[in-house]
Length: 241
Image (cartoon, rainbow, N blue to C red; front, side, top):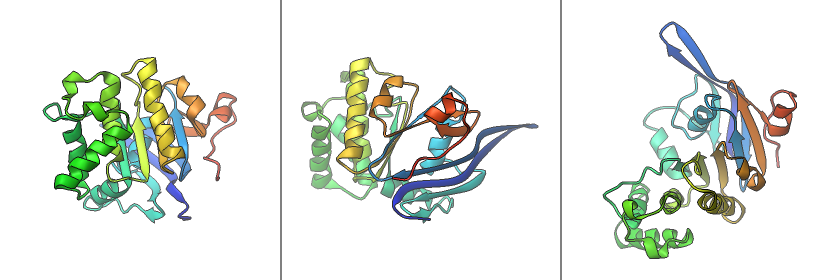
């Protein structure tokens, strides 16, 4: 596979077995995400978006198909996956997933320590990352003292820790008002445009479309470019740039 793509997947399927019933969550998805791309995955609940994102993020093993991260095939061996995630991927979730007993800076430091950055360097880098997302004055605040938008920006700073080349976000504006949501998406767009990161966002939020380089629609486990999907033209893949 060509290594000019940060993420590449071919023929991805995911089947869940619930007793005698098989649920085909993802059906034959192909996708390529180059550096600097902001990609939006849309679709109804239960369409397979989060399942697909989890496979691209090396969290969930596909039933069939292959994934390449930074040009290298994912081996899907349990001992290999944490290393791939720590080295290459930053995750952002709808519910923030911050440690309630830690300050903003300490939440970011946890991610830095997992990537081998410790002590004074970790503290300095955590403060710098919070400054980059506009929270320089909130570094010592506990999550309970932050607004929803501020919590999500702490989560983004944490995802930036270690400068991963790939950012994956699952409904990052789902718990935010329109203003806070726009701030969060602008940060992710800047990470793609100026940081040359590959950003993949799963969302129901139509307002994100204006920021995306590519928009895909997912339904019944199948993925298609948005315009093709709404006109019933079948499946497709991300255009090579």
